[in-house]
Length: 481
Ligand code: NDP
Image 1: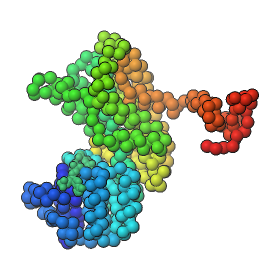
Image 2: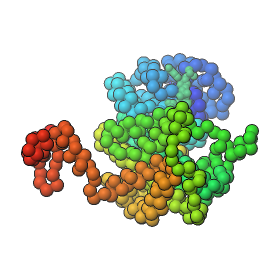
Image 3: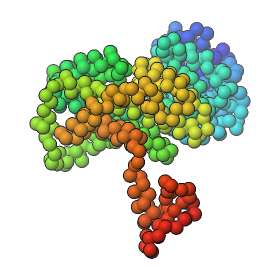
Image 4: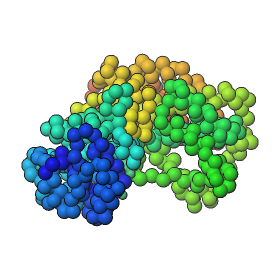
């Protein structure tokens, strides 16, 4: 075989990734798709790519140099397992199977274990950036063995997005680490988008500015510390006029947000790890709430302030600047929570993940790309075992500067009845972290009352229980928890 890399699955992501690979010096790309029409179409449409097409798995394996390396880009779930089975059948020990689909990391851990027993390497790889990223340079998050990285590293570096001269790919960690990090990336993306949406809503209803005017505000914000792809495209979306009606496009789009499930995965995983990713959770739930049309319909008449009427902002410019600061502070919280989840996942699954390097590979190619990720890389460079990202000096300064605005915006949203779930939950998380004492002490008391769950004391070691239904004296209890 003459090809040094293969792609299985030639729908939009797979064909674009294959074309990206083929466009790099020194690569010859073997391609295969279950239905032959996609293979034929790709090869005919892109003769310049010099693809090595195959119409059976045997032919595909024969087209690849040894050790073989192939990237699977098929529908995540059972199709991935079906393709893996076929590749295991035709590949040999030492070969590498890469799953570039959006797999759940626990599936990747399971697959890696099963494939490893055959002597073949399995790499779960997160790919971010959608169709365009796949074609022009995605952010790539590969897991798998160190041995696989030796072969794959140079190939992946050649196709990844470039940010400030560096390719947006790093060996994240073993087995499911890459897909885990990709999952959290998507969760952070949910939070970031929700925060931007809340900022837009407050400006619109608070100042009466038009979507086009708000587009200018976002474009302006994009020149400061909020600079990011998501802020940039927000301005583009808000500026768009609907050709059919002449109205702002955002006003004719149905206000029900869709989701493909990676936000929910991030939250479910965080729940089982005990990591409070409240911003991501609120963002995911906000999408759920928006899509319950029937519930919103019957709830429309519920009492509350009539937002527009009760929303008198004296100084629009000052209010908009406060929203910008609230967005900045809440965004810092969202990223801090996301990195907390990666840290906890690494500890739970035994991955060595360089958190600063993760921020580095998100600077290009992916949806959350932003200058600000450099500050995260710097924070971890300074303190590699930083337990709470937002306690790094740069972020503390930012939070100090924005917090009175942040509190004002959250208070205003509550007073006038405009939902800002991600703004307010981020602030509550921040205040929870800062609190010297939390009412968790009372919860421990309640738990001890109804379930004899015991508690610890602040003044001496040991585990204690109050005899609530007896004479209410305290006894030393066995530590059962
Ligand atoms: P789809 O998710 O729509 O999957 C279609 C491909 O899967 C086709 O090649 C199809 O082959 C193949 N397939 C489906 N079932 C089987 C099966 N049982 N056996 C073999 N092949 C099968 O394609 P996309 O290009 O949109 O995405 C590919 C992967 O990339 C997915 O896992 C997706 O989650 C992930 N991804 C997508 C992004 C995006 O922006 N779209 C971004 C990042 C990752 P056939 O032609 O024969 O039906």
